[in-house]
Image (cartoon, rainbow, N blue to C red; front, side, top):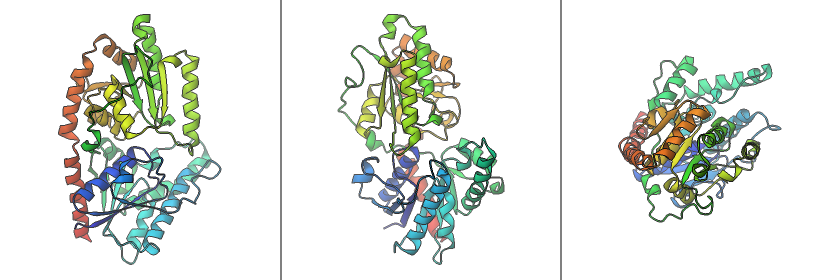
Length: 406
């Protein structure tokens, strides 16, 4: 039996960070580690299927604490929830563990490091939290100052710091000036290939009108920073490029994580629907709010190409998932996709402009064989660079090293 690893995560819902946590837990479990996952929120109706049937213990504590204060102070509330969760684990739960895997919120790290029986901590930095918000007012700057300071100080208390891409590693060192002596390791998120093996696909008849042969797909949460509007703007520009016959072959599916507890999800979803109606492309767009893993595989298998619209994405697992499913990617030429997508080989990297995206989309209309050729190249690239075996080996080495360190 390997070491016991305790995962602590703010909200075990559906997203890139949560996908990484679940994959890391499953990877270490496959190597004989005992896994315990603690979170402040877990909803069995809004989670990855593996959390239900993998045999991993998931415990929830602190969900009664507020997620915001009158729709504000999300970061402060997240810090309080995680600190409370850490205190509960250390002093009240009776849990026994050898090492802690923490991500997203570093504020809980001192609880594990300063406890009487302190434990080594691995911190996985998806991206510095202080860069995920704007400071447009003096009040916001004053509010964020102690939170930013705490993030930097507590991040530096981790025994091992890992990031999801070379892009994030560079941002990490530029952002945390007092941690310039730390060179974080890069651990790319990977795919659990077994979750993508499927031979029974249903088609898109329930989502796409008959005759729509070329289907573009966007998979991202309904959040403004994901810039889903770019996909709709690009569809408008593509419409102007095509004759009426070709236009009737085109469809776009906007599939996104959607949580009714999150006001931004509700607002942005409606904004996007209003945009589609305003520019008269509504009957060429399907809005899909949340979806099962089986539905995602069906979408990736049947669609022509993925539109990946966020800029400076820290890594972005969707392009990797898409390429594995033989689905080419059109992505913004910044952040993680620069490390996962090969331009003109597994897809196209474009500036975040509707005209550029539309030009790339038009290539799939004019040359339908691109789907097969780029899809084949993308699949091979994922097998070579983002395999679960390499991910498992690397994270298991970190855990073993930390338990020896203890």
